[in-house]
Image (cartoon, rainbow, N blue to C red; front, side, top):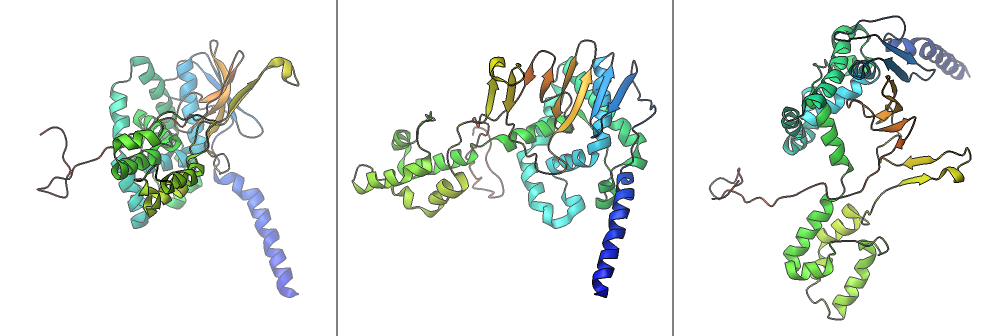
Length: 351
């Protein structure tokens, strides 16, 4: 039993080390004062027992800057991972295994779109995003000794945060929340098989939520084919099409969860708003970052995605705001024509 005693002894040592040492590995400042460049009036940051920050200030832009600072304290590694993923720069740290991911995101061009988007922001919106970026950069520049341990382990040295970084995350989230790309691919495959006119008779533009899903409709389509009503519906036998319908595509998604309860129906006599943003919460760190923000004109508590200023969903003293996924048409696909003189290129614009 000696080996059991040694294992038990080692486990006890590890537990003790973890209990006393791990909380100190990411030991950023939570007490006292720190000076942030450009703050017009003092901002007070109070953290509760779970570490959630509540920010109190006289000026909204000061509070937004403080939000950027405390978010970077807690989530700088997560924010930087978002950024290098979207920019298509994972290969710089993870090598060949990240190459396909980089090619995908550089092709999609979220960061290019974000840079263009930044140039057309109105003055107030630009100032809002810039205040947040300035807060993040205060921590990047002055808090290096307390950067998250994960950055050192992976070898990341984050560069300064930009407004385009925040906008790029918004594009990235929009892409991940869309659900119609497979439908559009399947629609084009149907058109290629049966022609546009017949396609329009079997592929509804609008979908009634009470109708069965497309996958449950396949047997009836086969029946129609067998009876001769749709002689050209041999696309169902196509293995690629069948895979798209039954596996890659799955049931048609018609909406999401978003509901409210009247005050007369709730236990405490106040209305309840609930929603399902469809962003994963079962991982660490989670997709959302909770924060409270208070000024004389603005008082709210809620969450946002690390890297995006303000609140995505939450409540103030008057209203609660939730978000959910409509599964609308958020992705557009194009059929490209390969240049016959140079197969490495495709044609763009009119001849």
